[in-house]
Image (cartoon, rainbow, N blue to C red; front, side, top):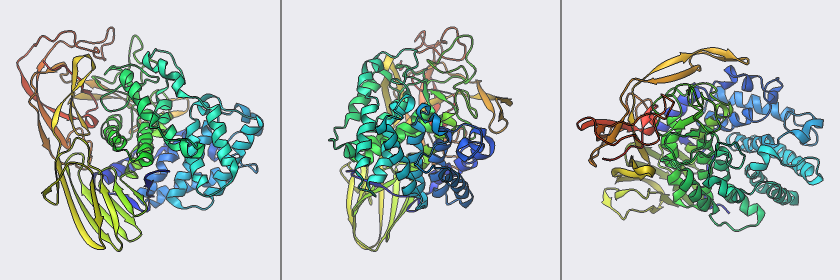
Length: 601
C-alpha cells in the first residue's frame, strides 16, 4: 500500500511563482493546441481524420489538471468536450479507442493504456461519475481480448504495460472483480522485463530500440511501485538499482539520462528528450508517494527546476525535442547527424521539432508537480515538495508562502478544526535549519498540530559548490539548482506549413544563434550566490531569480568535427588564453544556450 496519497486539484492550489508558471503554460502551447494543432483539433478521438492514438490522451493528461488547478472554466469546458466525445464513442463491448473492430489486433494498445490513465486524472479533477464505469468497461474489454488471444501486447504497449496500472489501481479501489487481478498478471507476463536490457544500457549504440528508448525507461522506473500491490509482490526498491546502472552509463547533471531518442551514453553534448523529463518526473512522484523515500522527491526537484524549464521557451509557446547540457547553439545540424536516433532539427525550439509526442506530452510536467506539493495518509499530511501552495483538507487549511528553490525560506499559515500530524520534508543538502527562528537538527520536521491557528517559519542554508562530473568536468550546484554560463543569442524565425501543419508566430520554429562567448574554464573555487526571488516569469532569461558569480578564463574548447554548432565533448586544450574574470552564472532552466559542465583549472 502507498505510504502517501495525492490530493486533488480541488484540495490543492498553486500560489506564487508556481501559479505564474501555470498561467504562462495555459496562455501558451498547452492551452492552445486544440485551436492550432490538427492532431488535437481534428483528432480521430473526437470524430476527425487526424491522429487517433497517443496525442489527445497525452495532451489531456496535462491539460486537465492545468485547467482545474487554475479554476479556468473555459479550459474545463474544453476538457469536458473532449471527454464527452471519447465516452460517446465507447463501443458496447467497452472498446474505447478510435479503431475499427476488424483492425483491433493491429492497433497498438499503448493508446488504451494511456487513455484509461487520463480518464482517472479527469475523475480526480472533475468528479465525473461516468468515469469509473467507462474505465471498468474499457479494461474489462482489454482483459477479455487479451485472455482470448484476439489481441496481444506488441510495440509500445508491450514496453509500457505498467502504465495500465494507474487505471487498474483506480478500479481496485472501487471494485472487487477477480479479472482486475488477472489482467494485472497478463500484462506483466506479456510485457517486457527491462532487466533483460541492462547490458544494452551499459553500451548504448546509435540503434533505435524499444529496450533503450529513453521515454520507455523513464516510465519504467515506477513499474514496481505501481504494480506490486496488485501483483501480490513485495516492494524491493528495484527502481534504485535500475537507476544506478542508468546513471553510471548515461547520466546527466540534472538527474535525468541522455536519450536522443535512445540512451546516448555520458556526454554533455548528447540530447535528452523532453518526454523523458516529464515522464521521469511522474515516475519519481509515484515512487515517493508509494515508498515515502525522500530521495525520489529530491531527484524530482532537480528535474523540475532545471531540465523542464530549460527545454521550454519563456512563454511556453515553443519547446525542444532534445536539450543538451552544454548547448552552444540551436541550429540545424549539418553536414552530419549528431543525435543518436533523432533528426537534425530536434533541438530547435518550435511547435513540433522532430516528433509531435513531446508537443502533446510536455503539458503534464508542471501541473503534476503542483499536485505533488502536499500528500496525506490518515491524519498525517506531508509537504513533499516546498512549492508555494494552498491546501484545503476537510477543515485543515495550510497556506505555504515560499520562493523555494530560489530562496530557502518558507512560511506556513495553518487553520485547523482538528488535530493532525504535519511533516515538512527538508532536503538532504540543507544546512543550518531553523524552525520559528530556533536552530534544529537538519532533518524532516515532524510536528503535531493542535486545533486553532498557528504559523511555522522554516529557513535553511544551501551552499553553492562545484560538483564533479565525468571527464574531469565540473558543474556548479546549489541545492536542487544547477548553474550554467548563459550564452547571448539571437533568434532566427521560420514560419511555414508542412503536411498540413502550420507554424507561425508565436508557435513557429526558431534557431538560437550564439553571439556571446562560451569557451571557458573555471579558474577558482570561489563562488558567491545572489538571491533575487522569482519575478513574473519565474525562469526568466533576462531577470533570473538567483545567480552565482564565478571566475573563469578563456580556453580553446573547440567544436565537434565537422559540426560548427556543437562544442566538443571535452576541451581541446586547458591552456588559459586570458586573465581571470568574473561572470554571472544563471540557473540552468533560465539559460537556453549554456555551458554547464566545464573544467576547473
